[in-house]
Image 1: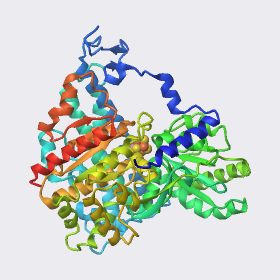
Image 2 (image 1 turned 45 degrees about the horizontal axis):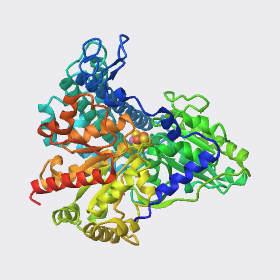
Image 3 (image 1 turned 120 degrees about the horizontal axis):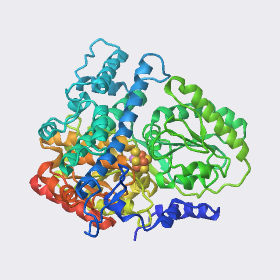
Image 4 (image 1 turned 45 degrees about the vertical axis):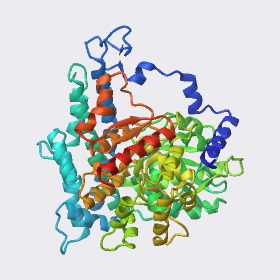
Length: 632
Ligand code: NFS
C-alpha cells in the first residue's frame, strides 16, 4: 500500500478547524444532503417566473416545463449557461490582462515586458514585422490585434482563434458553424438565446455549448496566458513546496488567492520591498504563499510555495497563522471572511466585482498598482503585529514539488537530448510504449471527492501504466501536496517504461534524480499550455490532436470554468473523463450526445467515473484504442 501524504494533511487541517469549533464545507454539505435530485439531473428550470419547473425524468408527473420546454432542452439550456459563466470568467480575465498590457505600453501602469521571447514568438504567429523594431512597438501591434477581437461587429473569424488554433481542426469547426468573431457578442447571444422563449432546440444549444467552449479555449485561456507570459515572463522549471506546512509561525504570512497575477505579482514585489519593516516588527520576514490558481501562477514563475487548493482555503485560515489573505477574482468562498474574522487575519478583497461582507476592501486597479499593493502588505504587517506571540496551529506537513513546466521549458529540456528535433525523443518513446499516453488532469478540488482521494489515487493508477500526467489548477495543488511532483514519485509509482524516460529527462534537467511523473503546467488558464504541447506533438506527427493517445480528466469538478475547459478539449477531439456527472442526466438525448454521439461529430466523448481506478482504467483503455488506430 502506498503511503499517501495528502490524506494525512487534510485530516490534520480538519482537526485544527474542528478543535476550534469551526464548521467546514463538509459539515455544510452534510447538513444539505441529500442534495436536490432535480438540480443534479439538470431538470430544474428557474429562468422565468411561471416556474421554477421541475421534471421528474422517471416519468412521474409533468413531462415538460409550464411553457412546454422538454427535459433535453432544459438540461442543454442549463449547461449552456454553465459554459457562459465559465467562459465569461476567463474572457474577463483575458481582457483585464490585455488592458493592463496596453496601459503598461502607454506608461500608465507600473509593469514591464518580461517575456521578450514570447513577444517574438507571437509576432511570428501573427505576422507582425520585427526587423529593426523596438520590443514595445512589436508588442503594441499584438495588443491591437487582440483589441480588435473585442471590437469586431463583422463575421470575420477571431484573430486569436484563427492564428493560434491548429488549422485542420479549424476546418472541422467551420463546417459545424463553431468559429466565432467577438467573444462578447457570443456571450450576449448565448444569454439571449437561453432567456425565456428563445432557443428550445437541444441540438442547437449543444452546438452553442461547443462554440462557447472554443471561446473559452482560445480567447479565455490562450490569450490570457500569451499576454501574462509577455508581462510576467515565460515559466522555467523551479523547485517549490506545497501544503499548509509552508506557513511560518514567526513570519508575516500573506496568502495570495484567486487567479490574476496582475495583483499577486505586485504583492510579491512589495513583500520584498517591505521585508525590512517586517523584521523591525520581530518577524523572520514576509512569507508570500500561493492559494488556488494565482498560487499556481506564482509557483510557475517564481517558485512561490503553495499553501492550499480550493477546498482547503477555509482550513488554512483556521490555523490562525495567516496574517493576510488577499484575493482577486474567482473561486473565493464568502465563508473565508467569516473564518478570518475570528483571528487577526486581514481578509482583503480587491476587485470591484468581488465584494464580500466582512472583508476589508482595498480597490486594486493596474494604474495605481504600487500604492494598493503597498497598502495591502502594510495591512498584513499590522495583522502580524497583533498576532505576534499568540498561539497558532500549523500542521508541520509539506511536500517538495517541481513546477514551471511551460511548453518552452519542456522544449528547452528536450533540446538537450535532440537540438534539431526536440519533440522526437518524446514521440520515439510514445512509439515504443515507454510513454503509453498522456492525461491532462485538470480542474478543481471537491469536498465530495477528497475522502476517496480521487485525484491522487487516479493519477497513481495512470503512472503505473506508463501514462504521463500533465496538470494545472487545483489538481496541481493536490498532486504537489501528495508528493507526486518529486523524483521519488517516479521511482515509487511509475511503470518501468515511464521511469526510464523520466530518468533521462531528469539527467538532462540537471536534477539529482528523474524528472517527476506529474508535470505542473500552471493555473487553469494554463490548460492552453497543455493544448499547445498536444498541438505541437500532433503537428510534428502529421495527425489531428484528437488522434493522439491523450485524454483529459476533471476528476473533482466544481466550477463552471471547468465545464467550459472540458468543452474546449472535446472540441479538439480529446475525450474527457469527469466526476461528478455533469447536470445533464435528466436529458436522454443530451446524455447520449455527450457520452457517444459526439464521437461521430468531433471524435471525442465524455465519460463519468466516480472511482479512481475505474476512471484510470477507462482512460488507459481509451488511450490504447488511440494507439491502435495510429498503428502503435
Ligand atoms: Ni480552476 Fe482556479 Fe481551483 Fe477549480 Fe477554482 S482555483 S481556475 S476553477 S477551484 S481549479
